[in-house]
Image (cartoon, rainbow over all chains, first blue to last red; front, side, top):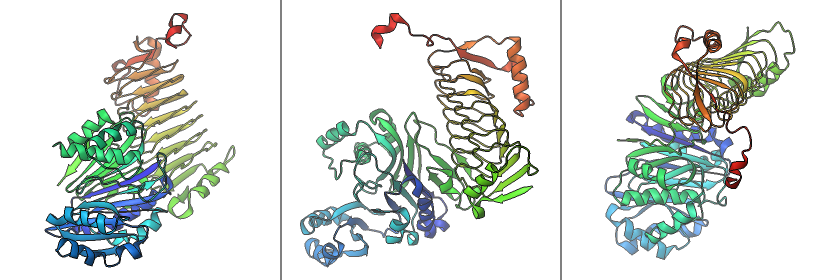
Length: 298
Length: 229
C-alpha cells in the first residue's frame, strides 16, 4: 500500500498555495504510507535557469561552499538554497550538464534528486508530516505537484527508495503497487544507456517513461506503451514540465480518485485526501478507468 | 434525531454508540455529518435504525450491516456494504470497487455507477445499480440478484455459481462459464419487485433486461481435463 496525491492548477491565483494544499493532502495519506514521503513541485523557476535538486547524508560537509566550488568549476554563477538534507542549485540552463558532471567530481557522495527548469524533488524517510515540515513544503508555490507516502514492498526503506523518482529533465513518477517484470526491463533500459540508483521497481517505470519520451513519444503515448510493457499492479501519476498524467493497470486494484473544477485537477489515492480542496463539494469526482491514460497539459 | 458530527466526535465514538443499540431502541433516526471520506462509518450495525450519512465515505461504510437502513448522501469508497447480512444501504452517488462484496442478505442500492468487482462473491444480497458497473463484477457470485440499469464491464459473472444477473444495457464481455439465459415469468416478477425496492421502478421496465447466469460447466472436476491441471 502507498498513498499518492497530485494537483495540477488551472487557476494561477492558487499557485502561491500549491505547497500548502499538497502538504495537507499528503499528511492525510499517512495511513497508507508511514515509511517515507516525497514531493515533486513544479514552479518558481526563473527564466534561463536550470535547477538541480541534490541530497546528501552528510549535508554540513557536502554542501559547504558547494556553490563556490561549482562556480569555479563551470565558470558561471551558481546559487544554492539548502533545505535540511537537500539543496537546490541554480545554474544557467545551458550549463546544467556541465554542473552535473562537475558535481559528480567535486562531491561524489551527493545524490541528484531531479534536474530541470522547474522541478524540485524532496524526499526522505519518516512520517509525511515530518518530511513536509523538514523541507517547508507548505511554503512552496508552483503550477503542479505530486506527493507520495510510501509503505515499502519491493525495496528497502531508504531516502533513494522513496518516491517520486526522476529519470529525465523535469520528469517524475510515483507509484502505488508493485511491478513483476522490473528486473528484466531494468536490464533492457541499462543496455539503452539508462542508469539506476536503486533496486526499486518504480525507478524502472520512471526510466521506462523517460526512455519513451526520448524516443519521441509524448506523455500520453509513453503511458500507453507502458500498458503493454509493464507487468504488475500500478496506479502511476507522472509529472512533466507542463503536464500531469495518470494511468492504472487493467485490473485496477490500486485505488484512485480524481476531482476537477475550473481551478484544478486533483488526484488522491482516497477521497479523504481531497476533502479540504476549495470547491470540492461541486467538483466533478470520478475514478480513473483501468488501462486508460489521462493527462493534462498547459 | 441523533445528530453526530464525525469531524468533532470521531469514528470510534460513532461506531460504539451504534454498536450499543441492541434490539429495540427509541433512537431510531441517526444523522452523520462531516464524514469527509472517513473509513468504516457505521460498520457492524445490528439494530433496526435509520442512518443518514451527509457526504462521501471512505472504505467499508456500512460493512456487515444487519437490520439498519443506511443512506449515503454522497459517494462511497471501496467495499461499501461488504458482507451485509440484512437491512438496506442506499448510495445517492457512485460506489468504488467491490461494493456489496460477499454480501449474504439485504438490499444495496447504488444510484450512480459502481466500479469494478461489484458484488464479487455475493452470497444472497440483492444489488440494484441505477448506472453502470465495472469489470469483473459478480466474480464467483453464489446467490442473490444483481440488477444493472446501465452497462456491465469486462468479464461479467466470471466463475459464477447461482446468482442471477440482470443487465439492461450492454455487457462488454462475459466471464468464464457465464451465459445469457432466457427471461421467464418468475424473473419478470422478481425484477419488478427489485426495481421497486431499489427506487428504480420509474426508470426501467423488467422486459428491458437480459438475464445472465452460470452454464454450470465449472461445477465439477472433469476427468477429461486432468492433463490440464
